[in-house]
Image (cartoon, rainbow, N blue to C red; front, side):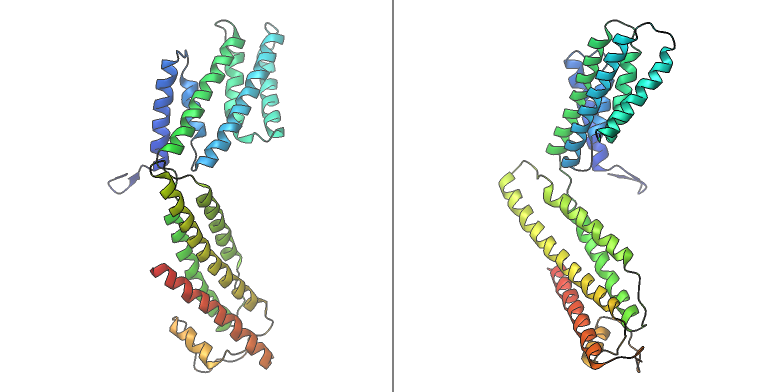
Length: 307
């Protein structure tokens, strides 16, 4: 959703708001005395993908239960002792330390909130109260997980295609820098972008599809994933050929046919391109080989994008 071209309401924001509303309504139906914890759980578990939401839900459940257990130990052991607020600080430190030890870092805020809320409760049995807060949180977590699965699961297909197009545009300038300018360009930014593309591909392959016409959608998703992986492999091949060119310790002049192909791709080739350093015929053959492979993969990928 867009308002006046400046304010954008994303899908994740809408699903988070919907999850909070459903969680609060469900908590009210279940008779919760403090439904805010259901809302907190719904907000905490809403993530970009369903797999992320599931992982964060499990983390939050474990962390919240840990905070509840530590709170129970403190209220039973230190009901009326002096310096209670000092012990609260110690308890919070225990919660954080145990969460980190158990690799529940994401759950630290919610676990600490549950611990503090249970310890500071003065309206009755704190242990029972804490258990209700734990179950309220579970309601919010479960609602967010279901909403993220059922309502328009995250689909990063367009993002992946955009990343591939941006990556492809990087290769010709890098090729020109290496072959024409006799420089050794920094390939670290390219490798970083390639790694981010691979991360997005993993998300795409693992994401569930909408429940409507599930079988058909699963088949289409697999075909699309295979197509995108093929495009990614071409980018990987181009990256490998470029890396091989950058590993050469000489810069021979490519053959006329290779230079002609480079010109066809918009690369400016000077009339008399000088060689840089001592170059043998083998060096020229090797350079021609890698440039040809790179441009072949480039052309094949361009053809796939046009389909």
